[in-house]
Length: 421
Image (cartoon, rainbow, N blue to C red):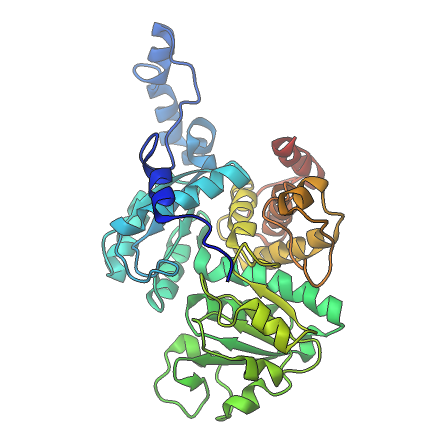
């Protein structure tokens, strides 16, 4: 296993010094004179207030709403840590804010809601929603996360997305699209085994279906999800197999396995049963279900991806959420719909095939090129904000999620490109 990236002391010092935490608020207007103060606060502030009272959409013109995302969690399913509570999740939510700002230029407030009650959580989020142009739900356990997201999407007219579900779905879909191209596999003929049945697994399987996959087998902690079981919730029932199968039958001649569970839930012996040129994603974090070196030793013909940055093909949500929200919010989309998610996945897949900038190869200290070891873009590819955000924005307009008239895709791309110059 690779060396630990940082020591505990280094991590704590990073978060404590020279100022506690990772984010702050900055002022965007001058406040150097008496007149500046009069415009920033009283009496000048009354003018935009009255404009917004008459036309709520003017909040996008006169406040930070258009560039502000809420990162909201109750800390019940923090990656690799579990249910650690709202307050303990705050460093992760601040980190999410760092990624929003760094990769897409979006500002954010992190909000930790101290309740596991679905009604109360939704009530709190709905009440504060006018502050924001978008809401990123984070680290909320299943199955509550499905109901929370559904309610908020229905109630609010700004983009709401639970990234743990849809981020992984978008990125892994992009990876599957390119892996299939490289191995000459057809989406509609794939046999995919999804190991895990939580929020990410359900959403991944849903998106795979939307791009054309027909044969998906899903396993939870009790084994195959099938019609003979009486212990399934509504979300798992979406992926019921017709009948019970043995573990060997499940993996036999499968094309793809997507691990969204924990270490050891499937084995080297399982991947040996897969068909030629298998696609093996072991996305448990921080320790994959099977370590990549073991997978490749057993199946040298495999395309392998993990959720870690120290191996090739990292399925990292930072490839998705900053740019999905950027595109959605820039055209004032009311929802992040399936068309927008598919557009994001296809944009990611297409970008991986373009010539890789030299600065990206320098970061990894090796020459990178599209192939089995590079099926999705690096998070450091600055073109992501242009290609993915633009694809999402266009899909929002074309699907009716946005009411924007006369959307100019080329002009929008030029505007986005200014961020990376």
